[in-house]
Figure 1 (cartoon, one colour):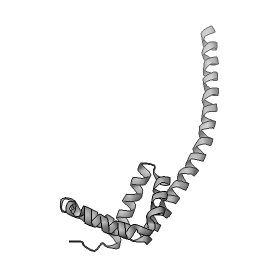
Figure 2 (spheres, rainbow, N blue to C red; figure 1 turned 135 degrees about the vertical axis):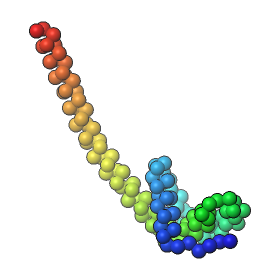
Figure 3 (cartoon, one colour; figure 1 turned 90 degrees about the vertical axis):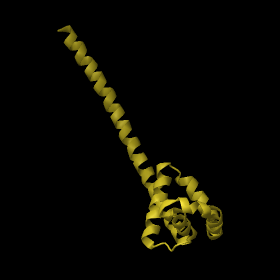
Figure 4 (cartoon, helix red, strand yellow; figure 1 turned 180 degrees about the vertical axis):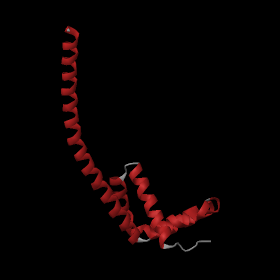
Length: 126
């Protein structure tokens, strides 16, 4: 019933997990969760197989087995944690750069609107 999972399938599953975490902006929460439960992931995956096994029949492409096999391997959890941290760092850098750019564009916008107002006043007099 439980099939072996190839390295390519594990890699795709890791990417999907990271995309979901990134999509919902759950980097910090998932890092804390994964670090906390890393020592018991194998046991957790076995419990998952026991309780989710009956639903595996209804899932396509043997999704439950692929996810559980990927998560029970601690090396994969380390890969997930490293990639989450990299994405969070990139977000921080983009946010810092974006804040600098936003301040500049706001100032430019205010100056532009004042200049536009003055030009309308001058045109109105003529």
